[in-house]
Amino acid sequence: MYSDDARLNGKLAQYTERLYRRQLRDLRITADRAVACILIGQWIFAICCALLISPFAWEAEHSTIHVHVYAAAGIGALLTIVPIGYVWFAPGATITRWVTTSAQVLFSGLLIHLMGGRIEAHFHVFGSLALIAAYQDRLLFVPGVAIITADHLIRGVLWPESVFGTAMMSVVRAFEHAGWVLFCTVFLLWGVTQTLKLLRKSAELQASLIDERDLLETRVEDRTQEIEHQRYIMAAVMQTIPAAVFWRGADDRFLGCNDTCAEFLGLKSRHEIVGKLNKEVQYIADRITNEES
Image (cartoon, rainbow, N blue to C red):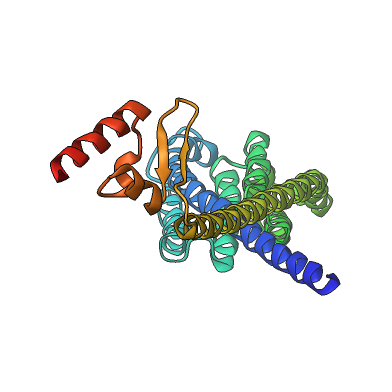
């Protein structure tokens, strides 16, 4: 008994794990497709920023074609086409999540640069972190936070205007931004952890229900076979009894009889009695008797 219970529990645990992995994969494939669409929209938005905002931000009142337009088109294309290729050919794969995550946070850096380091542009970073959380993969925050921190630190030293909107170099400010990113990441990690727990509980419940359904179907099938076997035995017994035996339902109609009863009534077959009333059987018997005579 113990070995059977252990085997059933092991089978249920394996099925639960398969359900959990399948649901998680479906969720991540959906996230892949959503990120791909968002990347396309961000690419278009980056070009618009370069055309409308960046020339004024970097060249005073001159709205000539700036190198930022080419940067938005070229770098934006790279950050869009490569992840979309992974989403198309390897949806739900680990490498796809890492590529799309990296592209998304790099897009945050590109948009901050194109908007001249405006403080409003930095809110895009938190949107990128929320998008990473949609994958329900805690490890993805590692490259996300690392890329954001490295981008702010390196550009904050070499080109502070592109990230802080001021020519004054400030390493402290870069770490301050990284601190706020980590602060947001902690809450997102907690949310991802809770979601994964709920997803696993859902898989356990679904696996349990499916197991109960299979068990019920097996019991019904066994009971049906048992009833059919009993009916077969009963029919065999009825046919071997050397006496006229018949049975009727609640509506007083015949449900069946054995061959001895059919022969006694003068019926050609015992099946002729099914569904008939007593007077109908008597009529058939009289008609057959008259025909034989």
